[in-house]
Length: 420
Ligand SMILES: [Zn+2]
Image 1 (cartoon, protein in one colour):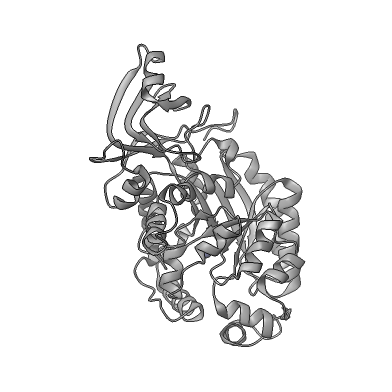
Image 2 (image 1 turned 90 degrees about the vertical axis):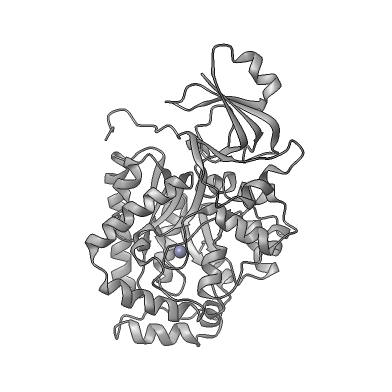
């Protein structure tokens, strides 16, 4: 057994514990036996190795929305001029990139995730290039296999192909790494495909993902059928392949009509969401991921965090890709929100980067995102001088640049017969 005794323990799903401790079965397996005040746990830990941490211990982090495949584009895609300008630059730059360089960037991105103390990731993938690497590193998470296409027959064939592929992938998955097709957006994926993908996820108890209300241009396209998005699609989509009609409805009303507001869908961004729309999201039980630094980079906008919280939504956080962000550190997202929403409690922001992320990805049973009995979250230390009366979550957010250290890595669960 290992007893981690820290100035503060932040469980992720509950209030911090001053002079706290975590009893772990052993450093190799990493299952939490108990968590609580050190004075209560220490007497039960006879014979355990004790590690005394000056600073804060928290669970491995959950980055609920990333595109690791774009990691080769770090620092190359200028933002600030809106989504269409950004995505055009992305496409042009991506065509110039060499795949072997992307491989190195992918490895570097995984190193970075690990160095920041990340235990789980919601990864939106186009090529599945990252799947084996995530499994090899023991990361938990969901691979959202992204589907685009405005031509109905072509995109439906793609969806059916991915649904079949699932059988094969599920057979040799790591049990803590899930896989589901996901529609890109309501303006790049034919509505029949969105419906089919969502229904597929619902029927199988999977979580799918959808970028929604990322920017005002999306609302304008869906509500009025004009503006930068239809103009961009007219340039990009081959003649005859544009079979997507503008619904003349808000992003949320349209998503709802397609069945895409519900507890099996993870809605990404909601930057352009209004209070009554957030109330609808909350009523439908959909999960939400906010990506504030990406929104700031691309649009110069922040997600409406206060309105999100007032609606009763418990958002997760994601970094989005290195094509629109400076790092893959989900705690830096929490810090970005702390700086701009000083009314939001630090403990709630840390929860967004841990337990809310695990719930948003449907990974509660994978034991990630919280330090709780029986969980295997991995334990991360943020070290430094902190007093017993100081707020440990405020300390963590103030020290996002401090090097984090894995005390106990998340134990990898391997299904019998499927060890890789
Ligand atoms: Zn994204």
